[in-house]
Length: 267
Image 1: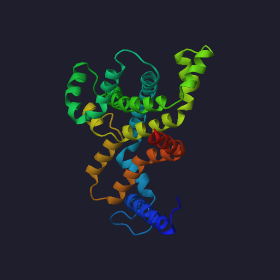
Image 2 (image 1 turned 135 degrees about the horizontal axis):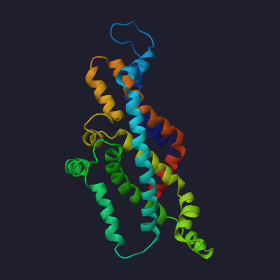
Image 3 (image 1 turned 30 degrees about the vertical axis):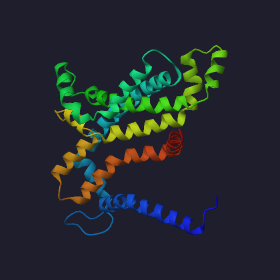
Image 4 (image 1 turned 180 degrees about the vertical axis):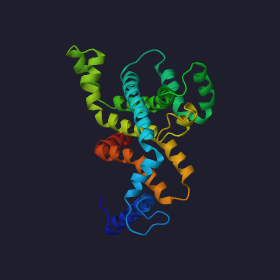
């Protein structure tokens, strides 16, 4: 079926419209971040980033976010791959009911459970530390990751597992040597998504670390905004600083991310 030139042109117009809709706010923030602060002359002011970094104390909050993200990504990826492999390639009693139990993590919003969870963790002395911020996010990410990896493993040819069994490989070796490498785009896609969700998480970090010592990047930006509501240039610079790690990771893994999303859509 041939596509006419008018249809092709219309597709490009629509895509450019969506691109402009997505990019204009980003470009506005970038332009504001290098604009002149109050009381200064025009021109590019790259010093806004250094000033925002120093005044906002983003070094500490970004460091806290890195630690939390490392814990969440490590545990979520490992547990999701293992659970997705089990649900996608093995048959055992109660697997369907257990899988739907996992999916409850996708259906129940964090706002509905965060307060009772805080009191439970506080009674165990597990608040105001990295695990208090990371573990609820691990539970949320594993719910999605199990669903994502189950679909990926179920779409793989059964002949891969049969060939591994004929070669004498046990299920764990088949996973680490054959299935996981074949599912690399899906795993990297999940890694990017989990990092983005963890990095941008605000409510859990706010509730689980009330002392403020473990303030993450979004909380640091909110605190900075509360102090400098009039300095739009510094606020924009702080927003760019907080968003930069996510942008860098996405650009670094964008090829694998797009491939994994396309494969997931095809399934």
